[in-house]
Length: 224
Image (cartoon, rainbow, N blue to C red; front, side, top):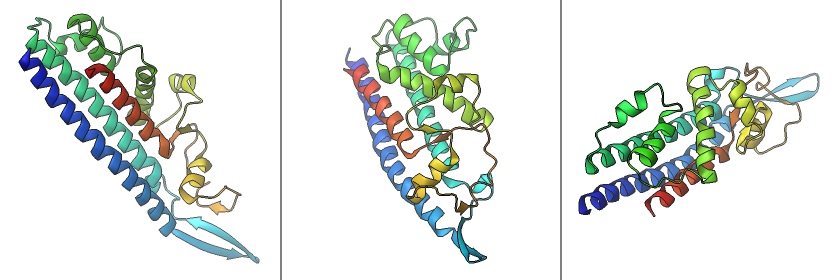
């Protein structure tokens, strides 16, 4: 029992440190995004009218999208890492003959690695897992978004469409612009409309924070 407590105490500390560091990083990165975009501003005058441009004509330079996506994918990857680590800890402590690797690789077990790891904890290790929490449902839905971001540059496939509308997600590029620049889009922020993001979804600044909160709630509930 003491070894179980010791190993899970280490996991709790690892999770706590990661969540604290990531929360701080999200705050800093959002400030950097705003500064970066605002610094790219320039004005074009034509026939007596002025037009605001932001140096974001190319997808690869659209900082809010690429940076927010990378933060979220890192968060999701850490959750996957922690759940599998829990499984391996339980496998050793409870002397389970079925390895978590074999369980995850078994084609008869459906779902993502995150879902399979939770099923291992619940059904193989016979340990409580808070799979009925709304936060767990949210995390599983986020897995669908993660796969689209990683494999298809955040395109709206059928699975993604079934989740929309979803808190922290927008399908309008102007919503990102408005959020970063703190104004309502009135058709004059050119340099944004040139982007080729048809049929895509975008993460708002609140999305990773909400995922982080769901992650923390899930872990707190598990360790209780």
